[in-house]
Amino acid sequence: MQTFIIILLILAFLSFVLQLTLFEQDRTAIVFCIVAAVGIYFMYPFAIEQSYSKFQQLMQNQHKLSNIMVVQIIECLLGLLFSIFLIRMFYGEKVNKVFKYFKFFPGIIIFPALFYAESAIFLNVTGVDFKILAIIVAVVLPATIFLINKSLKYLVPEYDLRLELKFMLHILQLIVAVIISIRIFRLPTTNLVSEFYIKQLLAFFGVVLLFGILGFFRYNRKKM
Image 1 (cartoon, rainbow, N blue to C red):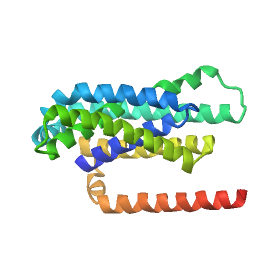
Image 2 (image 1 turned 60 degrees about the vertical axis):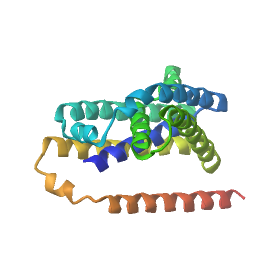
Image 3 (image 1 turned 180 degrees about the vertical axis):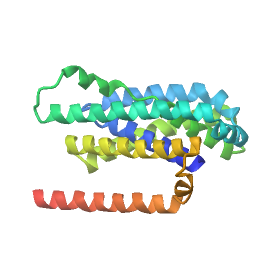
Image 4 (image 1 turned 120 degrees about the horizontal axis):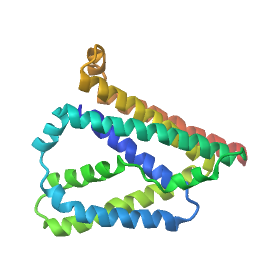
């Protein structure tokens, strides 16, 4: 169960970074990163209080997990609609312009994703003063977000392709949320889900990434 939760948080993080690439000006992404840095710094007292046992208790709390999955599924559906409307707007179809302001909504699951990352760092890094470590994390995590944002813009310069990637990420989030829901409520397909191993998932993502990179270079070669 914990593996699927971590995968869901990683997908939420990637979806957030992809959304930042939809802004033409870097200053908007910088503002988001500054807000994230401030939030990460002030969350560190709560991150210190976390432990592996608390995370295990959360994994076993059916009520809390089901609430998180409901929020995740609603957020994914809204993200899919948002991506569809922006793609239509990009190709000049008549769409209510209010949807373009949805880009400023970072999502909800990104907050527990950043908090989990911060808590994991505090649990695994020892010998450093908590306040100094909080400052380091508050700088490194937002800087990582900004660097990934710039890299994605460079690797996938086409706005519509980034929208399509965001659409695909929301579909993956939905799939993982459904798998977690099956595990939570112990539906009849539990045995099937238990055979889904992390190595196979990483292999799948590796193949997708490989074909994505090959497609990117092939596309640029055709443009030359």
